[in-house]
Image 1 (tube, rainbow, N blue to C red):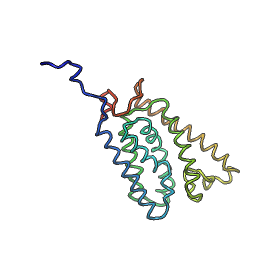
Image 2: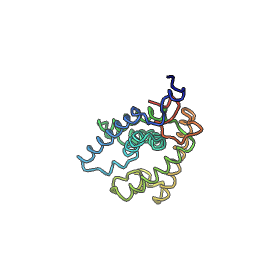
Image 3: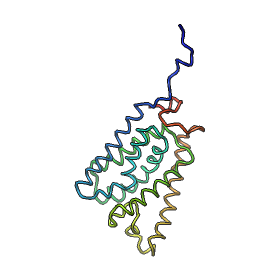
Image 4: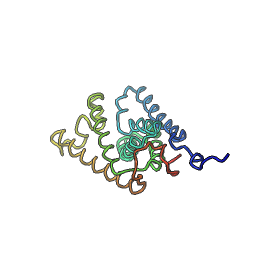
Amino acid sequence: MTRPASSLQVDHTKPSWRFRVLGILPLIFFLAQGVHYWRIGQLGHMFWMCNIGNLLLAVGLFLGQPIPIRVAALWVIPGLVVWFLYVVMPYGVFLTSMLAHIGGLIVAMIALQRVRVDARAWMYALGWYFIVQLLSRFLTPVEFNVNLAQTVQAGWEHTFTSYWKFWLVSTLLVAAGLWALGKAFSILWPAPLTDNQPAAKDPEPGLRL
């Protein structure tokens, strides 16, 4: 008996396990950084956007959800720049830090070209920044100044007479940078017009790992 053509089609309602299992990598990167900072008594540094972003990326991949993947991916590039300027140049490179930033970037780009990027991605990324920055202000030591949540960045004290002026300017710069990255990625990997399904459920073959 011949089955109807529709029943022979692949069931795209089930998330791709290969897409989800990719989340193991950023989770390993996050945990490795956690072990490093725990050993030196500086766990507060885990709240930096580049570090916590690996956890967000892992969650997005495990759940097959585009929004957290896009948010994490938009943050890996500014995180990479900050890491290079303020960690690599003055202190050098260590393994877990390299995995978190270079490894996280590679996984994020692989995932991003499959979930694509819509016009709202940068707004979600900015909202995530506000949440993590607020948590950083209350949960991390002042001297760490994680995500610039506590004080004016060292070297800019003479330019800004108060922290809130510094915060306003830096937030506007962050918003502009995220918008530019979101725009660039949406041109490179535009999202489908209907984009309400989890990444791993997308019916387009190009979105399946």
